[in-house]
Length: 116
Image (cartoon, rainbow, N blue to C red; front, side):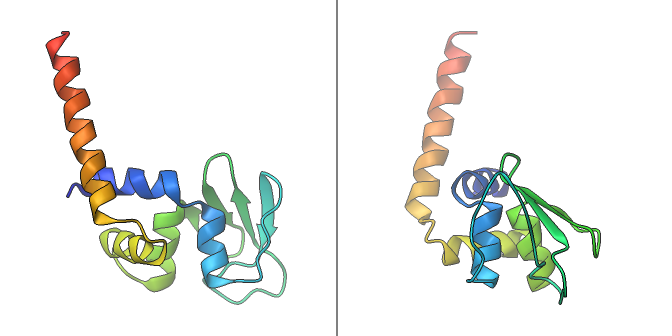
């Protein structure tokens, strides 16, 4: 399985809000920009901003900037590939869905080549 394609599937299906909610179940989704406690370290005041439109986060406390995959990688102290495996498991992203999507991608690429 292509790691790049898996990351695309994950980023389409899992939001930065979902990841924060995984670590902080009391987190409540709000507008397109939210400030919250960073699940990676202890905060006394919210230091992390979540950007719904870009599916990303930035922490003013530690300087972290990234997407759902890189946030899990940072919190769990694992590689990006391992972080994708964790997310896939946590959010029930099925292997057959990813395989089907890879097959669809291959078919689209083949059709595009037929017309060029």
